[in-house]
Image 1 (cartoon, rainbow, N blue to C red):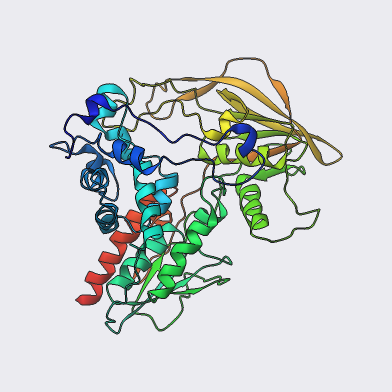
Image 2 (image 1 turned 180 degrees about the horizontal axis):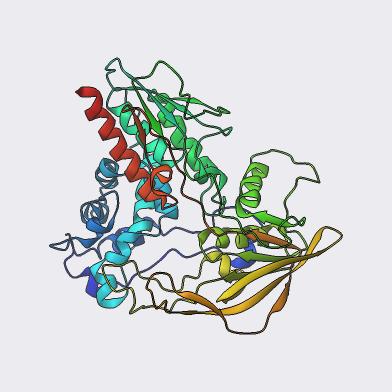
Length: 446
């Protein structure tokens, strides 16, 4: 703890976003960065608490006080080495993690200004690549092979850790490139795909083998491996079964997000299969991050308007008495995409998609309320207003994903990430991949 009084004298300073008038015309990353001096000053705010709740709250167990201190002292290489011990991909989490550590920070609870851990983490990772602190390692091989099915964050973390332990690792993925939802779900304006390519290049140089366009049946795994990792994520999105679902213009969110990322990568799509919000009134059903990503993508495609509806009540601003520490604070979140323009509504139930000649023209909805269930469990939904029609030329369903089910696998097959837990955070997927690698290592050493 280099400056024990910095938290009293240095206010929290975020890098912020590029101007709206500029960023909505491209898919470049919206988040800016601080200069090195300001970044080190932000790191000095860490109090090195006797009980570091940030470390406890992070699924990876990141040692934030240690690398913040190294960063404050200007020892970027030491900061990266500390970070690398617990996090395989800080350049990913530094961009898209909701920063559970910051909601656990003592400064957040005492004055509402947590240490900028996420931005500090990203800066450390970028400096490491820039200055050459990311070196190529060549682990000594132990003669055993492991197959990883799925190249999302969980599979990549498992592959990385197993490779470092000396296993010969082959990663199979159904897509044409690695990353899973990092590549085909998260827009470039939050995570540019060259960031993923850069890390995959390092992993390949270190010995991990990647095989793409491989639709592997997990009930008929490829032969020749001592163990297997199933990290296939949650491929099934939650749909809505109401009249008019078959109308042209009603899409799952990933139909938009995946295709747009592929377009940016140079792929071409025919007119009939091209999903675009250009010139259209857009309705996003679902109030989470995926819905927010649809909003930002729609703006960049040139939409006419965007409305987002959510079936749950609007969370309070700033603090929520219903979710006290150590719970995750359920409070109103306004993303960079929301700032770009969006009508947001809560407690809205979707009843019917309306169309003409097979094309969507609007959505019939109704305001609702939630009443306590006398028998306990999920509250009861009740009407709270008159039905109305929201004009919409295109709808994106962003209501989450279904937890997959798995057969009983042989003892040398391990399931990790969202495939095991259901849809969750990238940071939890990485943590699960690391844990699975340790389990496989222990299993194969017996």
